[in-house]
Amino acid sequence: MSVPAFADIAKSANDLLNKDFYHLSAGTLEVKSNTPNNVAFKVTGKNSHEGATTGAMEGKYTDKSLGTSPKKRPKLKSNRSGRSHLYRPPRLTLSRIGGPSSRWPPSTVIDLQPGLATVLMFYRRTGLTLTQTWNTANALESKVELADSLAKGLKAEGIFSFLPASQARGAKFNLHFKQSNFHGRAFFDLLKGPTANIDAVVGHEGFLAGASAGYDVNKAAVTGYSAAVGYQAPTYTAAVAATDNLSVFAASYYHKVNTQVEAGAKATWNSKSGNAVGLEVASKYRLDPVSFVKGKINDRGVAAVAYNVLLREGVTLGIGASFDTQKLDQATHKVGASFTFES
Image 1 (tube, rainbow, N blue to C red):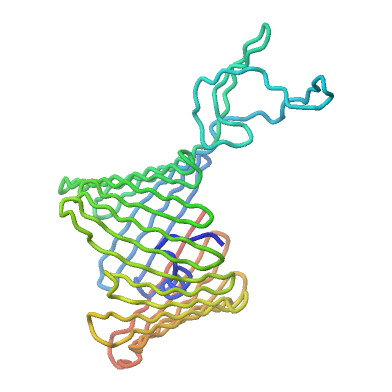
Image 2 (cartoon, rainbow, N blue to C red):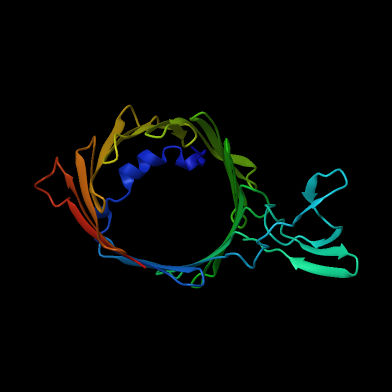
């Protein structure tokens, strides 16, 4: 299994406890669409229980292969010793324009042969992704991602935001570097501070260990630090994390019992607020290939249930509710629904 990012060491348990519970919003509508020219659109609208409505529109362009590569290898040519070898005439490299090296290096070359000069252009996928988001707060955000082009496993991101009403601007630069036993990230806020947040995780045979730290350049001080350890196997994961300057401790466990049943739990203790430990358990049961139910309850007696079903290809319905079992006679319960359309 690949090494996760620091924030995802307990991802399996967190997803089971937090995702697909639709009572958090009174109503949610999400529409996804993909165009033939590699542009994906997503429109999301949410109506909160307080009556406020929010929405966002996102367009994402992913760069695909920019050209073609030779389909055949050069023919084998025998030398004087009788051994076959690839014939490679002298070549002069003009520029390297593509991504990482592969079977045919992405280059512009001139083959020098007697009486013949041929210019060859090899193109490879660049890993470039452009994302533009606009929401109901009139905030514009542009994100540029370049993956596996500068180096294998390295992804660079540039995020630029603008609020026309207040003329506020934002600029962030992020780096993600992932190898078989290492996953590191660096987040830089160029206009606020500037600040830097760095985290890294190392893994070996399922065991994980990671740490994160933040630094403010103007204050010349560390703004926060965290640490976590975990273990992941194909059917279960466990993690212990200490966040908020090692003052909040969380232990989580996730188990995929079989193809139909998943279970998980999480315990949290804040050393600054007392000795009380928060506990939350959840389970997911797949009814059939197109539907599942989820349920969870915490130490305060708040329970939540959810049902998700694929009505037809591209149309998903989710409904959910939460109940305060200690205040059943009060209007503290919540109900929500979600529709997702995808084409």
